[in-house]
Structures are given as C-alpha cells and as structure tokens.
Length: 558
Image (cartoon, rainbow, N blue to C red; front, side, top):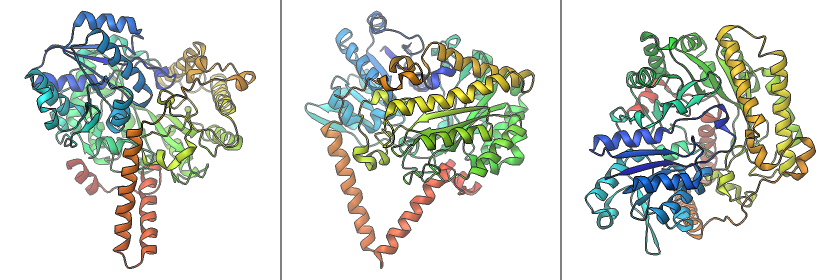
C-alpha cells in the first residue's frame, strides 16, 4: 500500500524568513508506520519547494497513492483542503486524510466546508494514523471506521467523531524517520546551516485560555533527555544538522530534565558541532540564573522570551503580569551568559493604541535585546478566548491567522495604521541595531550570528515577503491608507461548528451552576474560581507561580 504525505504550500512572511523548517510531523508518522510494516512511503514538501498546484498534481498522478495525508495549522487550512480537493479530482482512488491542530478542534467546520476530506485524525497522529492505515490495508476501513478512536468523518449528511484516542504514554518509543526529508533544503539563514526541530516534551501543565498546546497534547509528558540527545546526535552525524530549535513551548518547565539534557550534550562534545535555541518565559530565566553558563556551554545560543504583551495593555483575558523590571533583569542575565535574546511582543489587540505601540518600542530599546519581534495577536478559533471575544472578531478568513495580519481591529485606529506603526517599530529598532550594534558588538560567533540575523531580515524585506508586505501593498507610511489585506469575507463559521460551540458553552455553564449550588456561599465560590483561573494564566504568562520538581516529575510520568 502506497502512502504519500504532502506538506501544504503556505507562506506568510513570518517564521519562514529565518529559514526553511523541516516538517517533523512527516518523520514521526513515517517512523511509526515503518515499525508497523508500511514501507512504501513518499513525501512531497510543497512549501519548501514552493510548488504550484500543477506540479503537486503531476507528482501525485505519477505516484498513484492509495492514501494521501496532509496537515494544517490554522492559516494553512485552506491550502490543505485545496490539496485534498485536487487529489479527489486527479487520484480519486486515494483515501484523503487530514490532521493537525486546526482540523482536530474544528473538524465540524472542515468537514462542512470541505466534504471531500475523507477522514480527519484528531490529536497525536502516530498511533491513530497507523491504526487507520492498518484498517485500510485490510480493506476494512469503511466497515470498521467507527471503531477507530480519534477520527472524524462524514457519514452521508452526518458528521461523526469517534471517542478521543488515549495520548501516547511512551514518547521514547517513537522513532522518527528523518530520511524522508531532503535535508539540503532546510537551512537556518543566520548561520547558513541545516536546521532541525526536535522536541523534549509534549503538552503543557498550564491551561492558559489563549493557548492551544495543552488542549491538543492534553497530558504533559517529558522524554528521557538521553533519548533526545541520541536523536540530536543522529541528526548531526547523519544529516549534517548544525542548528536546532526545541519545539517545546517551554522546555525549561522541567528544570531537572533540562539540566540533564544540557549535561548530556556537553558529555558527548555536541556543542562543538551544533548550536540551538528555545522559547521560554522570563521567570524560568530568573529561576535559573546560576545555571545559564551551563546552558551556554551546552550550545544554547538563542532564547526567545515572551517578555511583554498583556500587562501594559491591560488585557484582562490574558492577565500576563510579567513585571517590567523582571523582563530587563532576564535580558541582562542572558546577555551576561553570552546568549542571544529575542524579545517577543504581542500587538494588535482591540484596545491597542498608538501610545501602547510606542511603549513596546521604548521597552525594546531600553532593554536592549539582540532581536525584537512584534507579532499580531491571533485569536485561535479553538481556544476559549476566541468565543469570549464574541463580535470583536470580524474576520473568519483563517488563512490570515498568521501572526502578521491584523485580525482584530483596534478601536483607536484602523488596520493599515496598525501595520504602519508596527513597521515603524521594526524600522527604528533594526536600523539602529544595524548601524550601531551588530557590526561592532563582539567578535567571532556573536558578530557572525547577529549579522546573519540581519541578513535574514534584509533578504525578506527586499523580497517584500516580510510580514506579507508585498501582498498587502504596504510600501511605507505613504501607503498605510491603501493597504489591502485581501480578507475573504465570504468565509464564515459553519453552522455545525457554531452549534457545537453553543452546546459546549451550555454544558460548561450548567456544570458551573451545579458546582456553585453545592457551595455554602455561591459568591465565595465565584471569587475562588476567579482566583484559581488568574493563577493558572499567570503561570504560563510570566507570573510568579512555578511547579516544584516533584510536580514536574509527576507530570512527566503521567
């Protein structure tokens, strides 16, 4: 049986300006399939090769697959749906399978707007997809699909979702097949080297209302650090990888295992061969002040910090109360450890103003991170916050949910002015850095890395791909009134999805009412719930809460 995976060709001028990223999902699915005896597996990377529809069709027709599998994050969902529509037209015998975070939670939306999608894999794909392929291989898929946990499909006019599959408890048993990927194509521009995206853990122990990681992966599970280093060493020696980014939302959550990971890298001499980066939060950096030199010796050279967003803009829904002095101190500590700092700012909320945008610029320049990034707020449609925002969300064209397009319209300005002011922040920050910092700060690796980052920005800016500026028609302040984001206003939330949301809200409201009724004082219960929710959000957002090592060990074994 022949299986063909296709990565959709979606670009937004966001993360891809730093390089071409290897689609890890293909390697993990293929590795699990091979262990089950499936060996006729092929991969078409339409994004990295920037393939037009005609070329994708040509390759599919040439391969004549029995199954076509693709994935989608929210902004790439229409490209994935279109890809499977082309498959229906040109290789109709193939079963068309869609996975990924958007389809997992929005399966009723997807199956309503793209009924040619045969089956959706909901959640972690390795075990579910393999079971699905075994049923197809036996010729029993249609007869037994209702027995496969973790999928959704159409049965006539009815949309059916089977019960959720259990999460994968033993992540160390997964053996990704990295050979399917064309490694010469995956480059990290700042260092001009091959790049990989392994991960140490899946899930998150926190449950922030604006995030989807904890919802998708459900359980927080941490891999054996030795196994992670085994995988990295294999990527370095066999594929020539020279830089990797841990895919975890926050790999430093489990401090004990992160230290073991760093010590193992050093013991094998890998920092001489490969450098790496992570995303983490300010509080973890403050907590690990004495360990930062160890992290740097292990090859950690780039830390992206969620330094400031909601506190200064008073976004009550986020309640991300990182203190300004904590942000500055974390950046100072990383600089002293010779680790590059990227400060992340979330902008474009409904309460954004010219003053709040100027505030983020002043903060960035005052703190002096090596890099700064202003990302447009994106209200994921499968998070509680999306529904809480209600009619403040006016755009349902999910192809624009990409961190670079203003989905929310601030009350104090239009979207064109918002984009212009964000670009003004970028211009001022990087022009000053290019003239007075990057060429003169440090020598050797530090100077080479900073100039490489500047090269990535310049390349994307010259090609008009940065922030999708070319497509939006932005050429500077003189064009802000003529910017067109090309929103597809025909896109709406499907009735089946709306009904499902309403049903979930009703169930949640009924559960809260029952819980409150059981309390002696309902008012006290409401206050307790609010305090608990506040604590949970602050933990991930940068507040003071930390999990103990015992709690981390328990979560890692879950």
